[in-house]
Picture 1 (cartoon, rainbow, N blue to C red):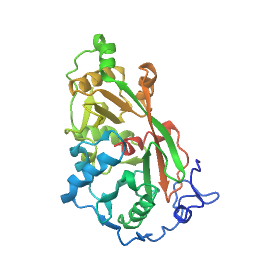
Picture 2 (picture 1 turned 120 degrees about the vertical axis):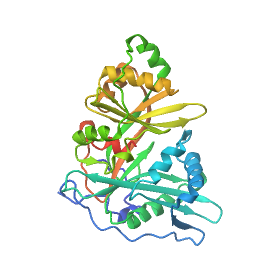
Picture 3 (picture 1 turned 45 degrees about the vertical axis):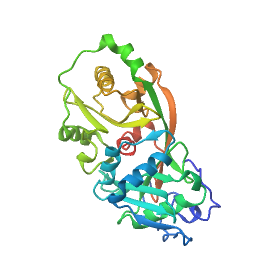
Length: 326
C-alpha cells in the first residue's frame, strides 16, 4: 500500500485512513471524527443548491484543472444524481471551495455501500490553507449515512494512502482517422440504448456498479453511449480543453469491444468534431495505447477513506474504473 500521507498533520492523523495491523480487506477502519468546522468567522459551508449552478459551473471550470472545462450538461446531470451530495465553501467575497460525491453500490453484499468523491476544487489563490480538509470533513460527516468514501484525485494524490495509481493517455483523432480511413466499414448495427447498455455492463461489472443506469448510459451533448453488434459497449464524456479543442474521455468499454468497434468509434468521434481521445489503460484500450502511440497525460489516484482496500492491479480495477472515470 502506498503511504503518501502526513502523519504529523493535525487533520490526517485523526482520520480513519490507515488500516489496522492484519485488518481484513474491505472492512471499516474506524469512527469518523466530528466535523472540524471552519475555525474562521469569515468562512461558511453550505449544501449546494441548484439555483446557484452557474456560479459553481464557472468556479469549477476556472479552478479544477487548468485548461480543462466541463460542459454544463455533464455537470448538471452529475449534480442531479439521486442521493448525491455537494458542499460549497465561501468567504465574505466569493466561493473558495467545492466538493461532490455520489453513491457507489457494491454488488458484493459483504462490502459496505460507499460514496465516490469527485470535483474537489479550491480557489487557486486560497490553496494550502486547509480548505480541502474542511470540505473532506464535511462530506465525511454530512453525506447521509455513508461511512466510506472513494476519492479520485487527478494530477497529484491526496495526503493519505491510495490503492490505485494510473495515468490517462491521449491520441489525436485526425491522426487516427488518417491511419484507419481505409479500414473503416460503415456499421449500421451501431445503436444507442440505455437499458441494453446497462444489461451488458451489469453482467461484467464485478464488485461495484452504478445503481441507476441512466446516471451513466445516456446520450446528451456531453455523454454518449454506443453499442456495437449488440454486445460491445463504449461510453465517453465530452469536455473542452483550451480553445476549440474537444476531448472524448472513455469511461466504460465492455469486454466484447474489439478492433473493428474501435475503428467505428474513431469515425463517430470524428463526426462529433472531437480532436482528442483520452482513456485509462484498461481492457481493449491497453492495446490501443501501445499500437497507436497514445501520449502520456495526467496521473490519476484513487484513495479509500475509512475502508481498507488493498492495492489494486489494472485487472482488478476494471470493475470500478467506469465509476471513477465518469
